[in-house]
Length: 430
Ligand SMILES: [Mn+2]
Image (cartoon, rainbow, N blue to C red; front, side):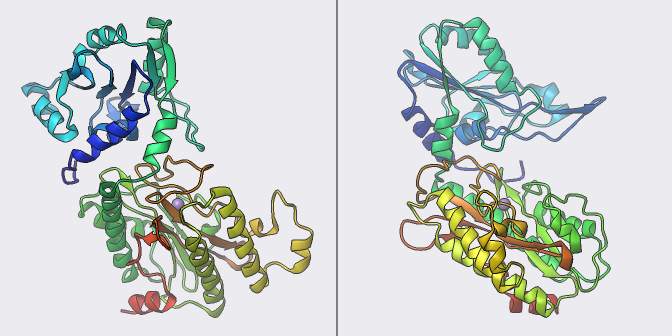
């Protein structure tokens, strides 16, 4: 791992919060992700399952976490199973977690080798009535492969048909949505690394530069600051590419007079940041580009003010739609008749702004977090309105990450990242 050791008090707290919501005499199990094969002996880089990471800090494949608050033997209240390591493995693959290191990272006293899992698990299941399975209920999930969690659930149901089943996901959505101060600090680090990347670009972007050259500049800056790289696939979209919402090719040359939309951000210690900025390729906005840019910025600023405790996500999005509608009228993109005749299920503004304004962010870029209950302090959201006008060869989106606070407006983790037109132009002219 490139990141600095995270204090295990964070993971101790997280487990405490999870266990406080478990039923009596119940066990919860969390599995690592698989390492996905490419072909031959090639694999994709390992990405830890964010739930086991959140609860243990263990960032290694084939790790299993078991929580059993009512275990008769108190050393089995929390158990972490890790792959057995030895000198041979160390030579080929580098250092894997030793029992001592696993204990230091997680704050868990009982560390076993993975080979002991079957036996220990069977024994503990005889003491318990309920098993919590970690199913994926994210509102945007779409998984076509079978995960280690899926295989564990299948096997467990066959082996223990008389147990009751419960789900971890609702507890995780509840606790992961509200961030601890340590988590906000890690997200701030991710945002600060993103800032460095963005500032580097302001002196680099000019007519003739290729989108992938911009991508390379960012990756260089991210990795030299202890990030693994991009928190999500980077969108570097000049001109009309900005109107393809999930444009990932990043293979076009940036032309004089065009804007370039960049939805690009670093991860740090598995925590995401999520930034979008749109800048003129030649360093100077045209009058029309300025008008549209300022409209997007106003919507963003108004939307941000509404991110306070008590706000309901769906109502917030309706309000954002109203603000956007009035901006689009001002820009001459909609007229009164468009509004009068609009379909309430697909309001007129959606022609130019067709995605959501905010999502939870944390260990996942589109993070867990409750969406139907009122917002709470220490939830972290993106704010990312955009206006997309293919007829004018431009798409503008602006995005920051903000922390909901108990009093007043949210705290902007990206406060230091240039967004005002004057600042962008002056930095690009250097
Ligand atoms: Mn986003």
